[in-house]
Image (cartoon, rainbow, N blue to C red; front, side, top):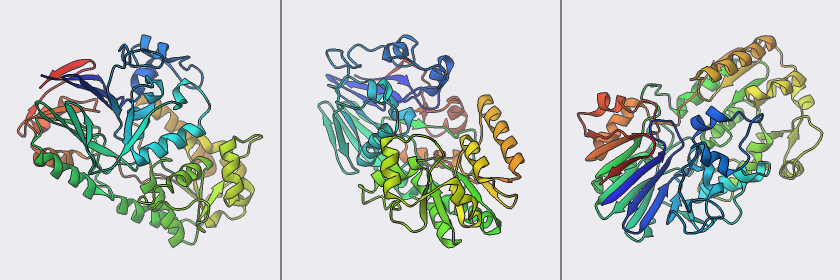
Length: 438
């Protein structure tokens, strides 16, 4: 008998922590932070957990003996990460150092770079972790369990789905994926490979099951280019630091409109780290003539910031203020004090190229942000392509893979799977700490 336990990622978006047990082998698929559970008790930076025991005691991370640092017999043979987003990877810092962490080579680079940018603390400490990397085509052997990683397209590079081969058949795991991104062919590879393995169960994400916006990256590029071409002043663009596809889009727009893309120190540091993976083809933040690094106004800089400042072409608020018509500035709603220093004219624009607000707290933040834009006289353009698969795409992928059973994960609306896909396969509903047997 094979047992699958859902310690996170069931009836919630993110927080994936899925244990698969077969004979003496135990693997954990992802080890992410449950952001919803965390937000029930903590509000950074004003109230943060002091140590892992607080997270365990509050039920934010699972109460499993041997799972955490300093404990004896390891609770798992391995933890296997699908990608680097915090809701899939953040809790690895808490792990028993006798449990190896398997991940894609790009994920390792991202985790190391982002940890290097954060202040010290128990949640940012990767020292002692046994990282082991893989790529598509590898087979990971854990005794009774073998894991076959297959690349998928997502909004962060180096994302994978997994085919987990057990004594009772194959379990397919989607990780986070999409079929409308610039590398939709990788998601197709996963679907084709999964079908050939005739999976007994498909653990499938459904983040966007109630939200459909089939906008591709090329459409983002087309619409954002039109905005930039029609804007005579400063263009501000908000997009995820680790979304290299979106960064490439704005980098190309800058080149084609005779502007430079001014990125943050964080984006530059991460891009510089990703240059180590030649297969990604990311722009060079140090030497590319259409990229500059924006240096915020502050008294002291961290070591990693100083490293980028010394190497890159750096611009300040004064520099940007004097050449607004030549700049696309990567900025978020938290950078508005900095924008005060730049003093953008009413001929500018703000392109929001990240998700729209979808809960009350985000709505409040968005309203505050709009007040800033109104003050500056900047129109807001929402131009985004989701990192998650869309409803009709999801139905097509499930039909193609043809699993015997499907388990909705990474969704707050798991029962919609029954309405949307019950004609394709059997749907198994799970909650946190549910156990599924195969």
